[in-house]
Image 1: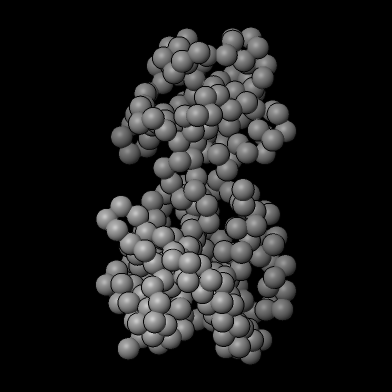
Image 2: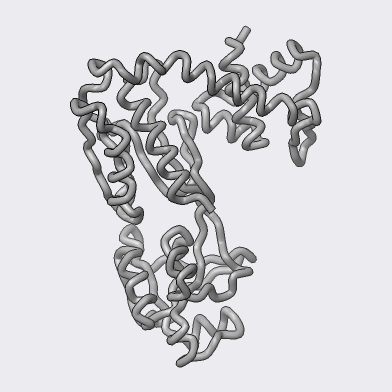
Length: 301
């Protein structure tokens, strides 16, 4: 028989994802455990929580009413057990190693994190921005932040938001060169940027929501990093396909225009993760939870 609080945690995650497999990945447990937990919970409650078929899953009316109550109980129980732990300074000494891509607004993330850690002067942060996806187990890294496919159940994962790519250009470039009427026209008749793939020696293809893709033909600018591509776009030099979380503020200010928004492609997730550890140090749990909330605040829609 599963612990009731653990079963409620599994239910709340499943209510959010509406996918048992994704629930298992997020919680770092076997898919069979998710199925069993929901079944046992339904048996105890005497009500179905989910309606499931081969194509989709959704909450029952009872499940919809039960979800906020379960979330409240979990929140209160977490506060009960962590209130004293979070103030034991001896548990908050030592280092927490964090890796993330240099894509993010690191200064803002760090400033917010340090503000929350003012009461823990013996907690040391090792901040490791890198374009390379470090192996966090081999490198003994405690927390990772990435954009990409969500990893397997060796990790505890919190997804922050979907991440896609937008085709963008400055209003000035569009005025000079005209608004492209098709992807083919864009590919062959307009100056494009490209991002170099260091593994293959070629540039990455542009991909679109309708399933099509192309490689830039004779790109006007080739970069090894996304921020340099952004600079070329902001300078009015190129049409570029860039991550939506990177270009969002420039779109909001009118410095860039989203070309073919119907073809915006969302293949990835922004997520934070850590190795699955039965005895997680309190300092790592604290920083992981703080970074999760900081990222959700910074990158909310």
